Length: 140
Image (cartoon, rainbow, N blue to C red; front, side, top):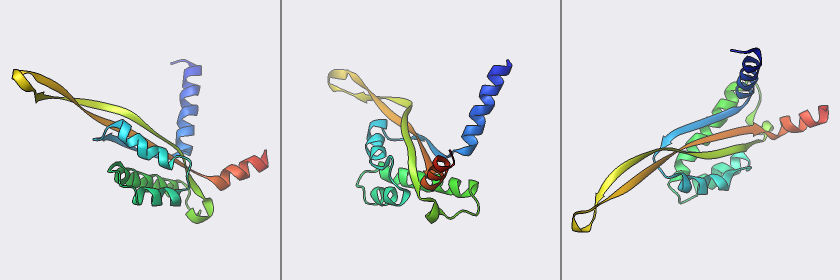
């Protein structure tokens, strides 16, 4: 492997170690339904996002609520000694990607068959501290 490729791979690896994120893989709901809920919490503070998810009637909100708690726990593990209340955590990024599609057959009239596509999705949430961003901007 070339030096340039290795350096780029190492820089991506270091960036990923700094990020506090959580992923949910192969969630058995359609990506379109999950994105409706994900769009509601993008950019919101963690407390507000938890409230939105708790009182949302959508089934996808329960999965996202667990995922957000996991991302916050990952932030706490990487930032030992810092208080979550002081850090002002917010949902920096959230994106929903399509996962595998299970193809099933449903009987149709006159001996025919229709194909049913059971979709699933991958969700990634990245949380970050607003205070750290403010401090970085002041230092520059």
